[in-house]
Length: 340
Image (cartoon, rainbow, N blue to C red; front, side):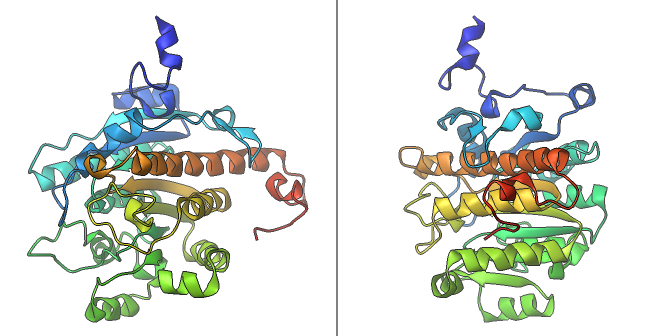
């Protein structure tokens, strides 16, 4: 009964009902533009565990919105071939093995010129995932826009170098992504402490706190973050910790921090980044469905991925249709030449 595959609540739980692949050689046969891959790992969590169940929940319990994007005026999958490449194997309690497996699976995607879209898992998975992307595109050639309530730049947490509070420092120290290539958005609360911010300054990192967003407005900060990311590197990796959202929008996460941004703002910024940039990778992490209510967090994470894919699809469409010397269609239709 193939009809079951058309139902959001039935059939195989692949992301967006996309073709589900399991083997690397299938990527060579399909030659997709982007591939979803799960990283069901949460051993690096410091507070509430459960993000290992995030990839399955995002695939299985989010409401499917359809594939036509009304703001962009396109059918996403008419312009972007997307597959679901299953999950990296993350055996419980084995951080090094799990991280290596994540790096290998993401590298299998990126090395073929396919954009990996990783579903976490706690934020420690960005260390192996972004490293795999840099392995292909070159160390220092990838910039990261990082949405989060927390900077995740600790040296170690309770002796753990692979905590979900340390991945950005590991990326910087390894040389995979220099500190000058980071733009962080949404920081707030009571962590990290001053000495960590002093280290971040030494690395030439850029960040925009919620206080700045409150004072200047989200559109102004968004414009700065987009332009900063453009100036950083040839390729862009977008990392979204779902706790960047206020807990009213995303209660199902391990370290909720009141005072965050709205899902409307996050979705539009991710879309804009993926439209304006040559995106080399995306991850959405820290979805812990056991603490969710009415799938609020799961749906927000699901839509982040859809907006990233929509931005990539619109970029491809408009590049194909653009006339020399004319702005891309997304702006022509609105009578503008650049994003607001």
